[in-house]
Image (cartoon, helix red, strand yellow):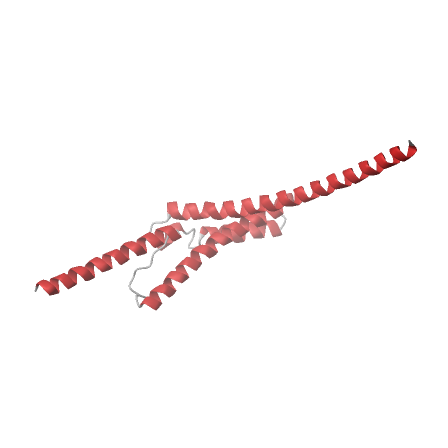
Length: 162
């Protein structure tokens, strides 16, 4: 009987240790998930704002005092967190700052990529600079391409008819 009680205590100790490991892993996983949601959520938010608030005809329309707001927010939130202004939420503040900086980086990457594409296509400097979300930029580029094709087709039919 004493042996049975001893085995039961040993089993209970192992079970408690297993539960503690599971809890630790769950906390780690949830922390990672929370950080991901904070980062991606802020990046999405700035992307939405850029798409909603940017005037495609005015590159400066989304800027605050001449600075991109996602860049300003990202740097500001990192500074606040590093200086202890976020208290126990510093990790969260860093995650959100990373989302704001990711938004800025994607926007600049798209703009630089479009410039490189214009250069390779020989259309650089034509004043076709577009701002906005990648979807807006792509849509405007597609419309410009269609307009150019129509103009080319019209010129060709004019020459053929003359």
